[in-house]
View 1 (cartoon, helix red, strand yellow):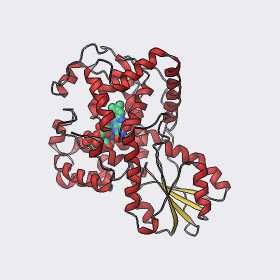
View 2 (tube, helix red, strand yellow):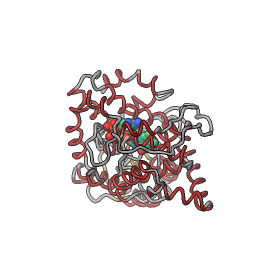
View 3 (cartoon, protein in one colour):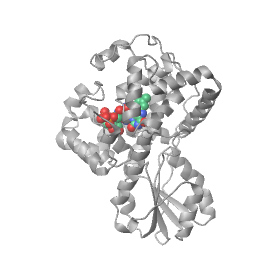
Length: 401
Ligand SMILES: Cc1cc2nc3c(=O)[nH]c(=O)nc-3n(C[C@H](O)[C@H](O)[C@H](O)COP(=O)(O)OP(=O)(O)OC[C@H]3O[C@@H](n4cnc5c(N)ncnc54)[C@H](O)[C@@H]3O)c2cc1C
């Protein structure tokens, strides 16, 4: 059975999974990817997302490995899915207020849960898999026990949550974010908005019983699902902004390395050959959601950070685990740091924290230098419109990789 314990939070485990999967990324994937045969069954999808999400393995590594075994045409579907991830990351990076709007909506909805008995009951039933809708209840159980759900199940689940159970979409997105090993502010928020009809204006996703029956190989045949999915109302998508500029690095300054779990690929920082005085880690699990993240998410996030440290030279041992701004400042001052270097954190809780601390750190004479991965700098600026326009760049991206 697939459980969260199957997902060891190490780069090696990610590489092993990729090596095992790569030969199936061609026609097998295209044929079977929409089928969700359940947690006990073999599946056509890769299960790589927890590793890519924390960048224990990178998008380039996934694409390169797959292209060793298939032509770009044969692996087109799979490669496109990997670039969906880059598209969502870029889309929200260019419009960060969508993440903040989701957080405001979530706070409002959590408040409503506390004051409205009916809403609280329905929300709890949905999260504990006690709605009486067999497929939905099974997916709630699978999510909370394994930390993974098939893409099609995520779409059906979100659709039933919004249009059949009529629960606020933000509560559903939050339930996912607290339980998914790959829980990601971009793919998750925008995936839920897409189902709700907020992302592609006027377009919703309706979970249909016959579609569920077909793609679960007859495991489920739900009745009583909504037959209409009227788009939710919300503000218009904000205009597309620009990416932040790269921070300048001053190699003469006493520098400390801050490793966070939004991007554990330190290749671009290590390549700078800086002399680093101290190392600290920062995990997103405490701030990803107002309610506590599931234990398996905490374990995976902390494991990813530990594995990243284990792969660094020994001088990085005994790192400090940063808990918030004051702690970060104390760590920096204890080591006499004048510069903190870190991977650029994409839109999400770590980016929010880094934005908050940048100025107060500066006032203490400590600069914060973030390094954006070249892959992100290459792909994100193209997420200006819909995926179909973004997709035209895939051959160019592959050539650059
Ligand atoms: C409501 C909803 C919420 C979602 N929440 C998340 C989330 O929090 N984190 C997350 O990583 N993905 C999310 N997704 C996207 C998708 O469901 C997962 O990326 C995918 O199921 C991961 O499983 P896999 O690695 O086996 O995918 P595969 O099919 O093997 O795909 C390979 C890789 O491509 C990327 N990918 C595949 N499908 C998508 C997609 N639709 N959107 C973006 N990237 C994709 C992932 O990085 C994945 O690892 C969500 C989708 C929906 C509809």
